Amino acid sequence: MNDRLQELYKSVILAHHKNPVGFGPLAEHVQVVEATNTMCGDTFRVGVSIQGDALTDLGFEGHGCAISRASASVLVKHLSRQNLKAARGICEEFLKVVDPECQNNLANSDDFEAFAATREFPGRHTCAALVWEKMLEYLIATAE
Amino acid sequence: MHYPEQIRLQFPLLVRNPELAWLDNAATTQKPAQVIDAIRMLYESDNANINRGLYDIAVRATAGYESVRKVVAEFIGAGEGNIVYTSGTTGGVNMVARCYLQPKLKAGSEVLISAMEHHANLIPWQIACKNSGASLRVIPIDEDGVLNMGEFRNMLSANTAMVAVTHVSNTLGTVNPVEEIIELAHSVGARVLVDAAQSIAHYPIDVSEMNADFLAFSAHKMFGPTGIGVLYGKEEVLSEMEPPNYGGDMIRTVSYQDCTLADIPRRLEAGTPHVAGVFGLGEAIGFIQHLDRTAVRESLHDLTTYATEQLLGVNGVTLIGRAPSKSSILSFTAPGVHPHDMATVLGTRQIAVRAGHHCTQPLMNHFGISGTTRASISIYNTRDEIDRLVSGVRDAINFFS
View 1 (cartoon, rainbow over the protein chains, first blue to last red):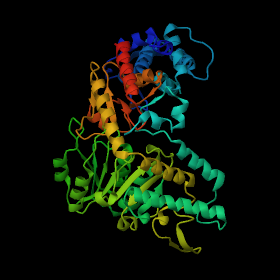
View 2: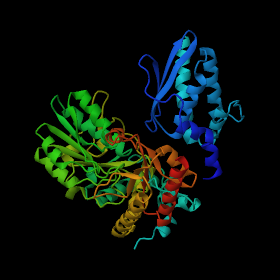
View 3: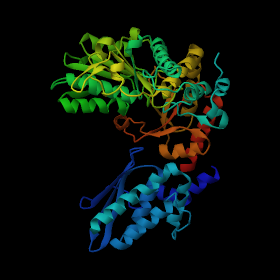
View 4: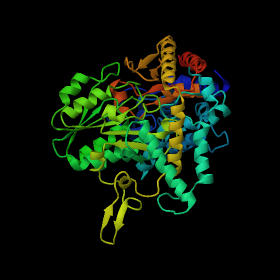
């Protein structure tokens, strides 16, 4: 495999793809944030409950490519037990990391840093960003 | 004989990208220099609006535009009056569904499509049925992607208003027995539309022999430009069609309160059309006619057989679409590798394939998968490119396992 691919599918992404955090059937009582990539039809459903001000019961189900699956796994890992405001900030940070317009390496976690390589693959931006965009929309709607 | 390496030299994009293995021909084909030149020459030498100007250039533009109609007609065994220019296959199917069929549909009417239709030959009928209270029924296929003709026979009845089927499936490669389908449909008085988007480049099509009522295709899948296509229709069905647009160029006389319409096909072509596209389409047909089409089909068949054997030699690769009668389309899944990841891996090796549902989501659901990787072979593809594809697939599987 060439360097570009090695960079894209860093061990972090492959590890999350193979052993995703919080992957499995969603509990019945959770709220569901659905993310469908219209280009391929792949869909993930992220489950979340809000207790007090904190995000709990995070998990996801569905199918998608290695990048989208790893992205959902990282989301579950990083948003669990965060409060609403912090969760919004984390979503915004992740989306900046994968934004093709963004030139800086802003990531302060290895998990996020691994996704920066998707900037070099414009066709794959949606795979990385989609669940985060939908989660951010949900968090904004919930706060209103 | 057919020599892909030589054909390749006629395609500027492939010459500029010598490492590029273009295996996404079912999505669109590349364009030979003569098609690109024809479009450029139109704008450089003969650009004028058609059917209006009385000066030389306008006369040339109009004559060129109409002469292509004749070229298209002869190419598919039709009369000039049966050729309607459209924006592409999608435009043609929509026109038939909305302007011909929908006004005739009523509660109890039935439209039959096959389970392997592209969304473009599904949604227009779905909407026409919803708008009229008619039913859309789906002819099933077996696990190899072959149409169940027995079931099709059972589904036909006096209520069948339209049968819309693809000639060649863009996802499975299945070649459907359209002549038989048409004969059976006609025996109950139904009309038939054939989606020829995937067949027009490589299969000889004679609409009068086939006896289709409608046949639609796009120029861009047959080495021509995007944004232009053709709808063929028998005279009796075209004359019953409501114009999709009203405006200039499709009328005979106009007053503020009334108008009389032009004859078909111009009645169905309001407004300034895609003149350059038509010139490109004419040139694309000329290009195809200069090929030894029998040798091309044999060569494609051999290369497809080779690719099938090689791909199936990779551990765990499964072909989706194994019809005995199949075009040069290979859809496959690989263990542990999502089609998008496969296409990214192959893309970094300059191998262009399609990944996903190929605009056939219900079909993917039928096979219980979310998508496939699809390699579609055309006249400029080589054995070497297939070897690179197979090696990329093998490496991708190892990488993700």
